[in-house]
Image (cartoon, rainbow, N blue to C red):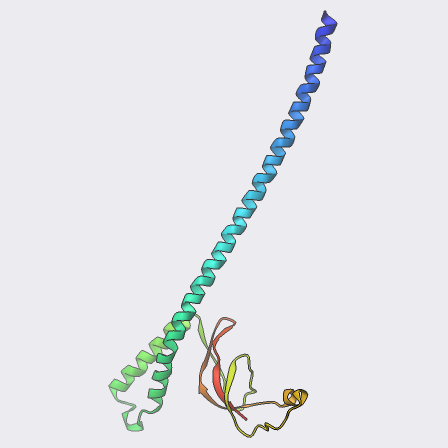
Length: 174
């Protein structure tokens, strides 16, 4: 009888060991699944944060594009102030308001694209509205690509937010 009990104990021990190994494998599998789920959730949070930032930048850009014509009008009107009226306190107040508007836009990421007469035309930041003294007879693409266009006059200022051009400068080229 004693031998039977010993055999039974050994058999039970093997079964228990197998169950224990099965439980370990199962717990490891659950742990790996949980870690994957946690990593997926972290990636989801990062993706949502990036989307939120993108949406905010889009809304900011849309608003700024609506304000830019006002800034253009301020600039155009202040260019035509008579010399004798420039010291007038009313004109100084208007100039201060224009500067405040420019500062607010700058604080929100708006940057003016700096261009001047004689700069090389870059189609990534400029839009040619008119061209002067540019030969239109050239049909060969290679010859057109070699032709270097320069800016004669900036008609409307261009702006960017970060690396993105939100409004190209409108220029006359030659």
